[in-house]
Amino acid sequence: CRRLVLPAPPREAGCGCGGGPPSGSRGASSYSFLFGDSTPGVVNVFDRVLKRKQKNWAAQLPEPLKYDYLKEEVGGRVADRVYDIARDFPLVLDIGSGRGYIAHHLNKEVVGKIFQADIAENALKNTLETEIPTVRVLADEEFLPFKENTFDLVVSSLSLHWVNDLPRAFKQIHYVLKPDGVFIGAMFGGDTLFELRCSLQLAELEREGGFSPHISPFTAVSDLGHLLGRAGFNTLTVDTDEIQVNFPGMFEVMEDLQGMGESNCSWNRKPLLHRETMLAAAAIYQEMYGNEDGSVPATFQIYYMIGWKYHDSQARPAQRGSATVSFGDLGKINTLMSHGKK
Image (cartoon, rainbow, N blue to C red; front, side):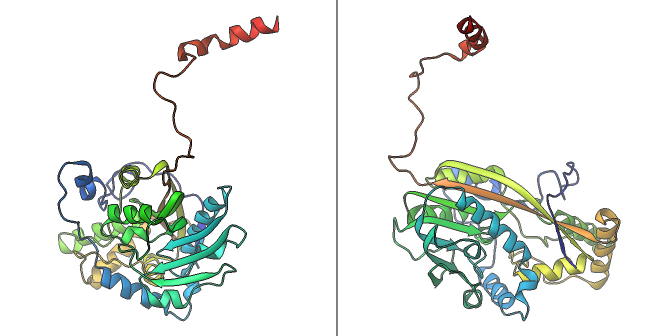
């Protein structure tokens, strides 16, 4: 059985498999051109055609609910952030909606109508029931087929980590938002599945004398704020969370990733692993990370982001030099208050 454990325990920096900068990060190195003067071509990391096939295959499984637990959990957390904003959203876009994991947690008192966009037609055909009027659109997250200033809210949950051109995706989201509209998103972070990544690397080094990436690269959290800001968003919020799931063993971890449609689709992936290497990786996983009850944990790091499209009505910082009280006077508050009481 699978069991969600919240939150995941803290880790110390180490071999690059866990607490330190992850070896699979596609952070500053992938998007550093945004912050310079030149603009080279897009880094084509993922096979988007393969990802569409993976998601379509997963959506056709006889028991899709068996693998929806993580996306349901994160979709609910994104919906919670929508409810935190004290306003209604007449028109909403869900990018990479899958089976509708965010809309499932929203209601028609807050959302008037929602557009669900995804590259997998089978996922759109098998969406979860919701009371909100829904329009389903077969569309790629990298090429949104919507006009400027269309939506009051754009949401996305566990989809944007498969996008090749993340800066372009953020700019398109900003483009389709109305002024004073808000984007709320969630995506996997760099420490996701560090246990699986480290176990596979060590097993390959031992059995085959080298290793290749088996976990897709992820964006670094330090990049998200820069990318959102360069796309035009303001009043940014970026925070991280971790969800730990316990499994009977490593093979069950990989089975669930496949059932979620989250298998690796990097162009430089290795097509297969030898049986001896897989068995060695499972043993290493159990030895290094196993729980006392015999289960093994899998950690999913989640980045949550909120950004607003500019509008004149939004609060802005005062002009430099307009302050009437100095920070140096803050230390005198207690003295002034005591004199006032007398």
